Image (cartoon, rainbow, N blue to C red):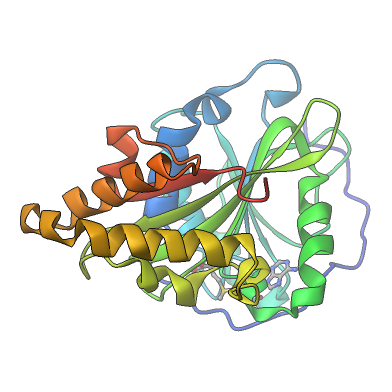
Length: 274
Ligand SMILES: C[S@@+](CC[C@H](N)C(=O)[O-])C[C@H]1O[C@@H](n2cnc3c(N)ncnc32)[C@H](O)[C@@H]1O
């Protein structure tokens, strides 16, 4: 049965540059598959048919289609929705739609019909082009469409997707949107040094790199850990990355020390606001 018609509401946001690229968000897909595979697999209750949403996919829908392929290894029936605020980009993506993949015109207020839900919303390289004052409202709006337990991943990467940082926010059972983690990702192609992540901090953090702010203190602690750990770099950047993570944990930061995450280049700092 087709879904009920969507109410047409003005998309919330503004069209921005559409630059994207093949495999740019591959690491984000890999993170999702390692961090919360259950969220992708779920098909119980309201989760049945709930979307993975790629908001702001750019001038061609490569990231949406690639994510659909990768995440369907976990859930072959996963429904995927690409959302764009630029009508030409929606039209350009239309020929790539299929039974479980669709593209719709929309904004932070997602174009969902009654009875449609989102399990995960990813907005990558979107908010960096907005004014900082718009960020909290945009996160709140997108998060409002998530099912309880659903995840909002908002972040920034370099043009190739080799280095990136993402905010992870989770919708609680009571409907609150809670900051869960800040994730720093690298594929080590350019080695590893904590300063690499500074240019790709999400909008929410980039202007807070000043003494007294938690993000500044975290990056400073990471840099100290790096300089203390440099002798271990003889074993390669992955080893150095993991050593720095252990040092951060020793200084009291809640960072995930599991080897499968660190080995893939994911440093997960839990409760960055706390
Ligand atoms: C730089 S591209 C990012 C493409 C892709 N996500 C990536 O990371 O490669 C940003 C895209 O977000 C779209 N966009 C900006 N604000 C939006 C909004 N509020 N809702 C939907 N799309 C939006 C722009 O039209 C643009 O095509």
